[in-house]
Amino acid sequence: MDIQNTIGLGPAPQPELRADNTAPKPPPQVQAERKPEPTSQQVQQAVQTINRKLSSSTSLEFTVDQNTKSTVVKVVDKDSGELIRQIPSDTTLAIAESIGEFQKGLLLRQEA
Image (cartoon, rainbow, N blue to C red; front, side, top):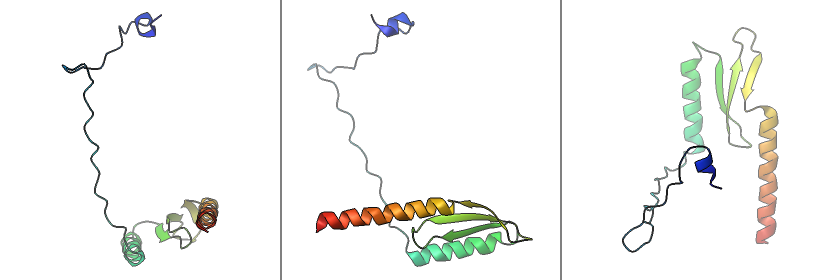
């Protein structure tokens, strides 16, 4: 029993065939050009610039975690300095760091 006919969709579309009864080949995948990764110094400068621009109007802080090299966004109460929210959390950063350390160990053991 054809489920498409049962629910009223009609027969399933068939792939278009060429004269030699073969399906057309899909177009080749286009590779996107990859930009080079920014250096640690460039990231730090960008973070400092953003923090300076935002310091007068908002309580967002952008930092880079040294262990995981991840960008961290903190929402801080300007008056008390209390941390309201951090993305990613300290727990998430710790998990990412331990996974990274675990993967390094596996890589070294495989190459040895």
